[in-house]
Image (cartoon, helix red, strand yellow):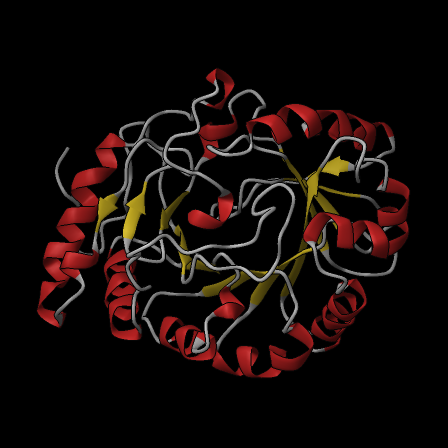
Amino acid sequence: MPSPGAGTPLADRYGRRFPYLRLSVIPACNFRCTYCLPNGYHAAPGAASPLGLAEISRLLRGFARLGMHKLRITGGEPSVRHDLTEVLRTAAAVPGVRKLAMTTNGTLLSRRLGEWMDAGLNAINISVDSLDRANFARITGQDRLDDILAGIDMALAADLPAVKLNAVLLRDVNDGELPAWLDYLRDRPVGLRFIELMQTGDNLAFFRDRHVRAETLESRLRDMGWEALPRAEDAGPAREYRHADYAGRIGIVAPYSKDFCAGCNRLRVTATGDLRLCLFGEFGIPLRPFLQDDGQLDDLVRAIGGQIGQKERTHHLHEGRTGITPHLASTGG
């Protein structure tokens, strides 16, 4: 397919458009979540350093030329990166970026929220896999729940435009906490995302032991009077629900559900600059060679546009094919 030019929205051969980019800024994480990095993060010998600020700026200007207007900063854990505030400021300065979001475990939220918002952050997702302190510590390896919940309340008090929480569903671990979550959502205008556990390259035994279908929870919500909402063009993968009795909303991310990939609108770039057309794709496309000079912008745009035709219609998780993703921290989840 022809490479898109300046101002041409990026689209694949199935008619899907991609206004949403997820950029990992560091693969490291300070948590040891059972479903991702149970033994903690260990850098691979000889691993390349993450993209620098100038490389990030060039990358984002290239994607903005191709219609990207929503950017999510991810990791690993992005707050592990010492210059995260400058990363956010660099991203916010890119013409065309209207929504600057970040996914974080929230450990620095209460201390750094103000500077992140001043740098341009206007949406945040915080991982909260349990509202029970002991259970949270068992899942994440960190007894930090109280501090994280305080940071979430700070974000709400600061009128951050979008505050969302992520909880990975784990069978017989946290899948019975819906009543506690409903109490939490009654008066808090947050979006809660229940995320179905996904198989990755190194978690097969854990996946088989703890996987629970998110559609089961979705059916319970509908039976309780929760109503589905229309999906925005730049929305994430969640199917979102609301209820008149609750200030908060609930989203369901069910990657094993029928036609999950039909509405895909996002691409990913790893911390070292590889384009991933799918979280569970079989290959990455190195973009870093096109990020070394401001004069390479046209080449970068052509490189991205020339690869989009390789994006497949769907992932292959149902066949147990997890691509080159060893764990979610490696690509930004």
